[in-house]
Amino acid sequence: MARKRLGDILVESGMISQEQLEKALQEQKKTKLKLGDHLLQTGYITEQQLIEILEFQLGIPHVSLFRYRLDSSLSSIVSEDIARRYSLIPLKKEGDKLTVAMVDPMDYFAIDELRMSTGFTIEPAIATRDEVERAINRMYSMQDSVKELMEDINIAREIEESEITDEDSPIVRLVSQMFEQAVQVRASDIHIDPQEDGVRVRYRIDGVLRTERVLPRHMLGILTARLKIMAKLNIAERRIPQDGRMQLHVAFKEIDVRVSSLPTIFGEKIVMRLLDLTNALIEIDGLGLIKRNLAVFRELIELPHGIILVTGPTGSGKSTTLYSALNHLNKENVNIITVEDPVEYQLDGINQVQVNANIGMTFASALRSILRQDPDVVMVGEIRDTETAEIAVRAALTGHLVLSTLHTNDAVSSITRLVDMGIQPFLLASSVSGVLAQRLVRRICKDCKEEYIPSEHEREVFTQRGVKIDRLYRGSGCKNCNLTGYRGRLAAHEIFKMDDEFRQMISKNYPASEYKKQAMKKGMILLFDDGLIKVKQGLTTMEEVYRIAMNN
Image 1: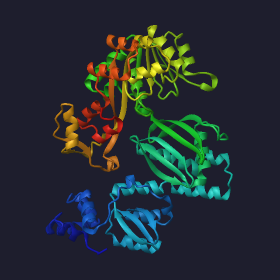
Image 2: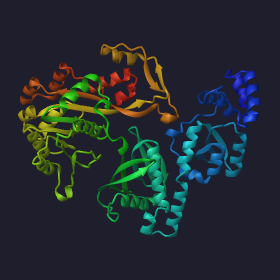
Image 3: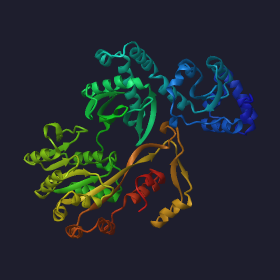
Image 4: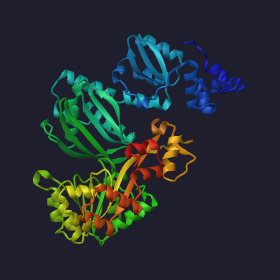
C-alpha cells in the first residue's frame, strides 16, 4: 500500500481545499488530535465521506462490524490494550495474514506495531469508530471472565456449586455481562446454542438473530448450570425440556426473563426471552393500528360478551395487544381474570392464573374454575385444544367477554381453524365477535431515515391499489441502528368484525376463501395493504412488508 497522506488524498478528491487543509493542520497542532479526527470534529468532512474516500482512493475495504461474526480466539493475538489504543479489532487470520478493522487504516505506526507484536502481515480494513468500540467491548469485555473460567475448568473438571453462585466467580460475571450486553442492544431473546465445535451466544434484535460470540465447547456445562440455578430449574436433569423464569435488575431496568431448556445432540440449548417490565403496557392507541382498524378494535373489546381473537405466529406481539386491551378494560367495576402460560406481565387489579400442567392446572381446567368466579372479562393465553375452545365458546355464549390468541396465518382462517378443532359452525357464528391478525415489521431508524425515488416495481404495487407514490423511505444505516437502517418494530394488522351475513356463511360452513371475499367487501384491509400504508407513511420498507405478508 502506497503511503499517501490523508490530507493529500482529501485535497485530490476535492473533499477539502488546500487552504482548509493548511488551516486544519495548524489547528491540529493545538488539539493534538489526528488529522482525520480533527477534520471530523470540526465538520469539514463526515465519517461516511472519509470511509468512501479511503475505500475508493486506496482500495481499503469497508466492513460493517455489526453484521460481522467476531472470532474471540483472535483476542489472544491482539491484546485489548493495543485494540483500544489504536481503535482497531482483529477480524480473521489466513496463513500469515491478519485482517484488522481500523478507524484510521492510514495509521502506519499502529500497523507496524501490530506486525511486530503478532508476526503477521497486516491487511487493514476500515470501520466507523462507534462500530470498532462496540466490537472491542464485545470481544474483550467478557474475555477476562472467560479466561478465568477456562483456567478454573482446566484446574478442576468438577466445578463446586459455590463457584456457580458466588457473585465474584468468573461464570457469574460472564452471565451478568451477557445480560447487560443484551439489554444494551435491545435484544428480545438470548440463545445459547451448543454446537460440535463451540457454544454460540446469539441475540435476537428487532426480530433478527445475530451471533454475538462463540465460547469454548467445554464451557457449556457450567454456563447452563448457572442459568438453570438462576431460573430455579433442576441442574441434574438434562434429558427432558424444562421451563423457568427469573427477575433481574439490569441497567436500571427490571427485566423478567423466561428460560427454556431443550436437550439436543450436543447438549442443552437454552433460550431466554427478555421482558422489560418498565415498558410492559402500551395504550391501545399506541399499538400502531390505522384509524379504521383502531375504531373496529376499540368497538370489539368494549362489547359486553363474545370471543375476540388475536392471531399470528409466535413473536408477533399478540400478548402485547391482549395486555393493552385488558389495560383499557381494567376498571374498578370490572372483574377481569386471565389464565396464561406463563404470566408474562403482572397487571394491577387483574386476577392472573398461571397454567401448571404438572399438577393438572391446564387452560381448560383453569377456565372451568374461572367461570365460577363471576368474571366479566376472561383472557385465555392461547386456545390450544378442543376442550379449551369449547369452554371459551360456552363462556362467550353465557355473557362473558373472552379474549384469546390462536396461531393462524390471517384473520378469517381462524374460523376454519376452530371448525377443524371440532367446534360446531353454528356455535362459532353465535360466539365469535371478531378477529385481529398481526405481524411485526422492523421500523425505519429515525436517525438515518432518507427519501428515495421508488422503483418501477414499487410504483406498480401501489398503482394496483389505486395509490400514487412519488417517494418512499429507508434507513441508510447509522450508529444508533447498528447500520441496519432499522430500529424498533411496529405491527401490521388485518381485522374483521362479525355481522349477520358472516354468521349465515359460517353456519353453512363456507370455505375460508369466501370468508375473505366477504370481509374485504365489508372493508377489511389485508395485512399486506396495511403494511403498504405504513410504507407510504415512512414507518417501514417494502422489503419488510414482503417478509411478513405475500402480495395478495
